[in-house]
Length: 491
Ligand code: NAD
Image (cartoon, rainbow, N blue to C red):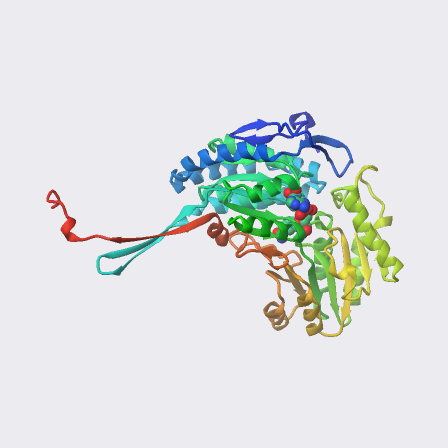
């Protein structure tokens, strides 16, 4: 990495009315680089008073921004997209530093953010309203209006991409957006806010407030904030959905996941093995689309053996990034320790993996646990690390029953060379995003991202056209004109 740490703030500020402002809060947390264990900054945990000042500035800015024509608003996003392309490596390095991902992973996550910014630039083509003469002389028109001041609360695992799922489109829609990033990864957000200002965004339209639970609760309660989009764990998604919803806000809250990959005997062996490996080890398993359980139908042992062989060759710190914190490392290892004690077969043991990373980094190798009963904690909980459990069944219907019994519904995938089997699975698997021979079936824009059940609370997807519905309200205008009002100066 070439990043010059002196270019990053030692104390992470909030972004208020277009300026960096350090919160006066006495509560502060160190920000660690997971790959080295080093403290790279300190982040003050903002208070409700910090939020009041931000909402006040955002409210004033939003009134003016809402009246800027949409074709003009998106010009800022065109410039932002171009700037992201130019500074992709720079932002990716900040992302890798604070999150511990490998650089190629960070680059890919920024590239996805660019795609979201690109979608936002197409807003003028997507928001034109409708008009119809509904009876003689009476016209009904529907028009879309911004919601107002809105907020996004985001997790640690994609410090650049997940905020970019939200703020480019919300801002293009005419809202003022307040971003509350994870306190573990606050640096990318402040960099992106600075970039948006350089792109010509008026002050106050994008703000950043750093903090933890206290500020999230203040966001949910603040009467000046009209919409909240949350991405994080299911436990917190439920809290935010209930709390902000009780205050009458629009809320969409995405939660955790437990994704099943079903392998049937006719699957292409090499493609399936490499794809499963990428799905459970990418981002060190810390993504809501990661493979967590392989449901092996019948005899697919050669494929599973090949996954294990490939997993053993992975060197953490070289091929795989770090785990976000020592606490998360301990939690993930705890699942492996208990599975071992209970007699499950640890086919590949990441606890013993040789790492090429910094000795103080938080590294864990890929782990494969075989013979996991479907009701075991390893087959049910979101472990959120590079741990793959193998559950064995005899038929595809048994596999589907296991997938559909899990309370989450983010992603599910099948590996098969049969179109009929793929179709059967896609029709019956209960998840918002289905992969056919793809272990991380993230829909590319304009197809939208969103799971079901405990993976999402509230209607609609978080990106794409349904996100426009979330960031805008519809107004219906019914008009009657009559000839008798014609003025005599008209022809
Ligand atoms: P998290 O739920 O701990 O934190 C998310 C946000 O909520 C952070 O900004 C955090 O400051 C805040 N927060 C944490 N505890 C809180 C509390 N008690 N009250 C109020 N706010 C609180 O999630 P995380 O550990 O940062 O991220 C990992 C989780 O996010 C995983 O469960 C993963 O599956 C999920 N995730 C889901 C998606 C999706 O699209 N469904 C995408 C990315 C991550």
